[in-house]
Amino acid sequence: MYLYNNIQSLDDIKQCLTETYQKENNAFKLMVSFGYVTQKENSDSGIWEPQLFYASQNYYHNKPKSIKNGKDINDLLSEISRETIIHKLAQQFPDTKTRLVGIFSMGVKVTSLDFPIGSNISLPGYIRKSKYIVGLEDLKNNLCFWACIALATGARRDRYLKKAKELFVNFYQKAPNVRCPRQTCNRQKCRNSRAQTFRSAPAALCGATYGQNH
Image 1 (cartoon, rainbow, N blue to C red):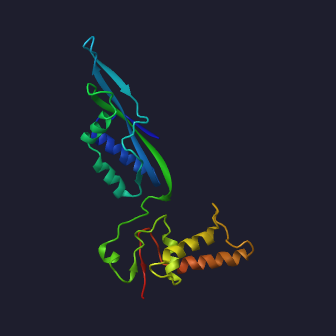
Image 2: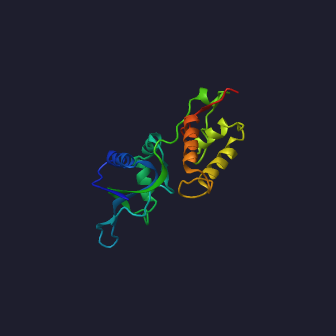
Image 3: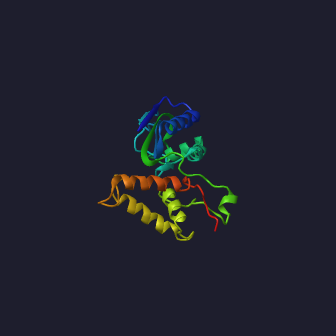
């Protein structure tokens, strides 16, 4: 978890979230919590008594926010405002007599994902509508490369996903480490064959395109 102290304004909060994004190399999920101070009037003495809460489990969002690219972090920053923060924290107050004094710190819990930041892009309309380009925009699990191979080897546009999954499973054999799918083979010949396959395959990005002439 990243812990940021000396939070004095909304700009500080957004700057800290931007710094978190810049520090992470892979896509990630985050949960934001705030350290804050409240006060409540003592009914007996009439004195306003403060109470301090550290940034811990009082998360701003109900579920983790996925950050895969610059658009995601910008969308998150636009969602956070002074009013929404006050409203969210007020929901945790024990009664309506408690009021917020201010926020002094922020915690950002990060869960790293296994693919690089910037994996997905939004394709322009002329590509999505083209009869000769398969956009792969809705492809899940970053199988773009395998989808390109499936299409290049003759899979139909409406059935390439099944073939892509078969290619992926055959290559990795459901193992965590990359290994030859065949237990007995000429290792050098196999590596050369794979290298040729990669060179001849169309370039692929998540949300990238694969052109078809038919």
